[in-house]
Each structure stands twice: as structure tokens, then as C-alpha cells.
Amino acid sequence: SRKIRIAAAQIGAVHRTDPRQKTLDRMLKLFEDAASQGAELVLFPETAFTTFFPRHLFNDPDELASWFEHSDVTASSNTAPLFSKAKDLGVDIAVGFAEAADNGERFNACVYYHARTGSILSKYRKIHLPGDFEPFADPEATNQLEKRYFKPGDLGFEAFRVPDLADGSEPIMGMMICNDRRWPEAWRSLGLQGVEVVLCGYNTAGFAPDLWGSDKNQDPQKAEETALFHHKLVMQANSYMNATYSVSAARCGMDDGKYSLIGGSCITGPEGEILAETRTVDDEVIIADCDLDLALPAHNPADRRRRTPPTQLKPKTIRH
Ligand code: CDT
Image 1 (spheres, protein in one colour):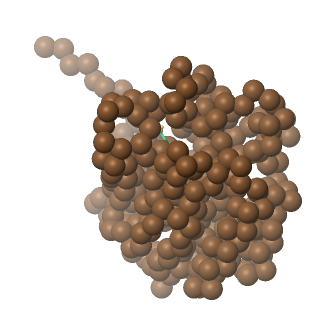
Image 2: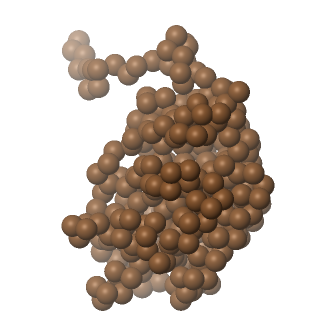
């Protein structure tokens, strides 16, 4: 059989003033916890090493730069200890970070780190950047200035094979970041490459009416429930339609005592069923044993559920 034990490491509130070392220590603890339970791969959230900084406007370029890491995230002193721990324990990691490339371009990125070879096996740069370039006029509104701080990803949705996992059968994985999970193209691009495990870290605002374009008078708790519902809906429905496992890891909780982010990290099977989910909005590890043979329809071209999309992608004009 082709089994892998996968973990999602959810990270609770991280405040703007929290020292990097404190957050890194929390990540190391989560990682050790997952590894001690036999996880072979641990997924961390989007921009996992810091608070979700795109909610703030930074006019000072040095201050803005301080939230980013060089593309070789395994080498930075802010982040390297997580990767050396992964190498020591022989456990793979997928983790999100704000990437500053050598040519000055910046991306909301994530990497798949392969412990056995001690190297980055794959990198993904977020394609669907939500929010705006300019902050809202209302100083109380929650901003999401991703379009200001990041370029849209330029690497596509590329599935990749992971050596040394699932009895050497090289499972096919793919990564997306947060808002990408709401777009069918993201899933379908990976689905058509036969993906077996989709990895998705996220920071999803709970009650943020300006951001969601909803009524400020709405009940905050109801708003959070709706955000959570949509999160689970897309993870379960797209896992089912693409016959793939999916793993999602939240940065969640109440940042700075005022910005709420939903939890709901989960591991979903190829039938759309939830195999494991978090119960808190705090630091928490969830684990599931994923039998990739159950994602078989993804590999069986004769399966009646799978069709290559038609090449004619424009609507037909029918004249009467
Ligand atoms: N980080 C991120 O992409 N968050 C978005 C918030 C949407 S803005 C209303 C998300 O899709 O969860």
C-alpha cells in the first residue's frame, strides 16, 4: 500500500510585536510534536514565521523588508533552525514565507523541503493575491495589502513527485496558498497533473466586513462561521472532485487582540471526507494516515469520473 502519515501544524495568534524567535520556537515545538507522532510530512501555514503583516501599511522600506526572507529560506537565521530540525528528524516540511528574490521581486511563497536530501524540492508563489494596493479610507477597517507587497506568482500550479515517501512510490503533491483554494483553476491545474496530496496554508480573516464586502452590522460570530464554512466547503468539494487528499494549515486566533483569523485546519480525503480537524484557534497539530491508493481515480484514465476538458473553452453563440 502507499500510505503516508501527514500532519498540519496550526499556529495560533502571532502579534505584530512578537519576536521572531518566539514564533520560531512555537513552530519547532509543533514540528517535534508532529514528528513524535510519526508524521512524515508537516504542513505549516502561509507566512508562517510572522504575523500576517499585509494587514498593516508600512511606509518605511526597511520596516517592510524586515518581514521578508531571502529566496533561500533554508539559510536565513530567522528560519534555518526549522529546516535543520527537519533534516535531523528526517521529516519533510511545507511552509509559507514572504520571499524576497535576488532581483528585488517579492512574492507570497511556500516551499516543499525534502528532509532526506536536505533541499527545497519545489517552490510555489501565490497567484491569487486578495485585497488591495491602497488601504481602506476607514482607519478601523482591516486591510489586506497583498497586491501592494507581492507580485502575482510566476511559477504556475506545478505538481511534483516526492521521493522516499509512501514506500518509494513517489507521491504526487501540489501546493497552493490561501485564496488560491477558492478558485477552481488552482485545483484543476493540479488535478489534471494527477495530484494526490494538495497542501494549502492560509490566513483567513474572520470578522472583517470591509474586506469581505459585507455589512458592518452583521454578527461577528456568524461572519466567522460563514468564513469557516467556505473554507471547509472548498477543501472538501475540491478534494472530492479531483480525487485527492488535501491538507490545510491555519494561522489563526486573535492577532494583536483585534484581528480575528479563522482556525479549521483540516486533512480531507479523496471522497471529500474530513479525516482530521483542529478543535482550537491555538497552536495545534492534527495527523492523518493517508492511503494514496484511495486517490486511484486520479490515475485511472478509464475512470468514468475523469474527463479531459474540451479545447473549446469559449461559450458558443447560438443564433435562432
Ligand atoms: N491570506 C488570504 O489569501 N486570505 C484570503 C482572505 C480573503 S479577503 C476577503 C482568503 O481567501 O482566505
